[in-house]
Length: 196
Image 1 (cartoon, rainbow, N blue to C red):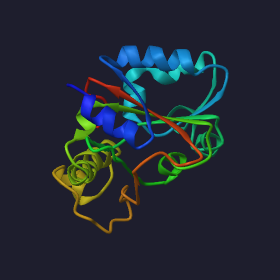
Image 2: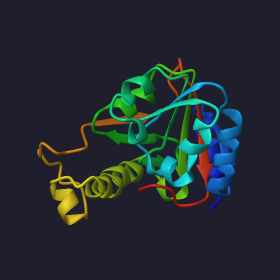
Image 3: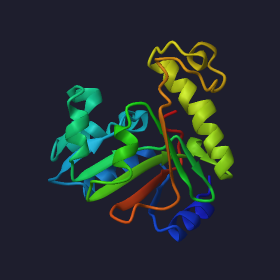
């Protein structure tokens, strides 16, 4: 996939952008530039699929609630570097994330010296509306299924029902039209399918 259009549009919005053909190349790049710092990781299958936690933990202090328990959410919020993915990315440059606890979306807005989004080609959609649709109707139901939630989207796996279930994982939505003014933000685009 050619990333030229989305790269140009992201850079016009103030994001730094790096592109890679493979997840292995992207992981090697991040492992090289993130060194000797504290790192927070948001809930991310992309990070897990890349084996990035293990690489970074060899020479950084890494906080990830998937491997270090729920208290790691608070430690991640204070980390020098934060790494996450996105539920949708529009070719026009908007980055979309939906979250349940709010820790992941909060860390994409404030509090770190550097923020990295790692985004596979499967997250890309032509327009903002289509990227939002993808986040709500593809990523969210698949994540609800993965987490074993009792929600209509998890049961049927077909779309968002805008449910009122107490197990709903779609509690907050953040759209970045550009990086927050206080946050050095880099988007790492990977020409492979990563995450949901």
